[in-house]
Length: 157
Image 1: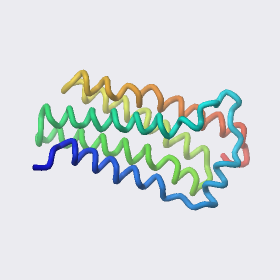
Image 2 (image 1 turned 135 degrees about the vertical axis):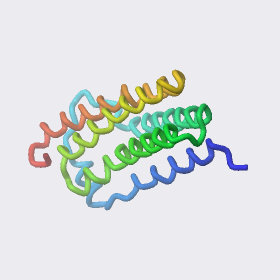
Image 3 (image 1 turned 180 degrees about the horizontal axis):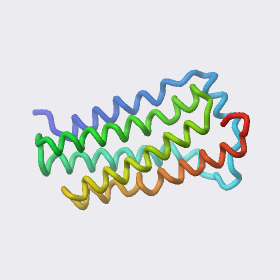
Image 4 (image 1 turned 90 degrees about the vertical axis):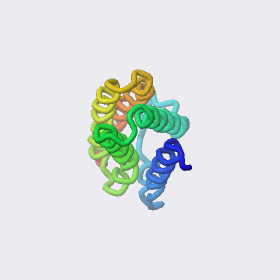
């Protein structure tokens, strides 16, 4: 029998693979951008996001296990999926369009969606909502960083 954590983890993993669809020229564009001086943990960002996605997937499993198969749970699973798609789209879309403004908008959208999801999930499970806290706390930091980069790279807005 396939467990819910396998399905949720599998879907999250497949969606996350889309982040790798970036042309080398787009990566070069992003790498040449100026960063704020205070951004000293850039190399840790992939690890941070991995932890955040694991927490979000774990949260989704808890929600599914509490009320499996009902309409409200399916809607919440859709919101989890939407949040991951928005988050994963940040790098490839921003780099393809070469627009830090677009990246800031995507980041802000993810931040808002994460709060809405947590409020919805809180009705089902407090631990599941708490597992979304890393996203809620980190997403505005990433969005602010992109916004700050926008001002350092005026030609790449």
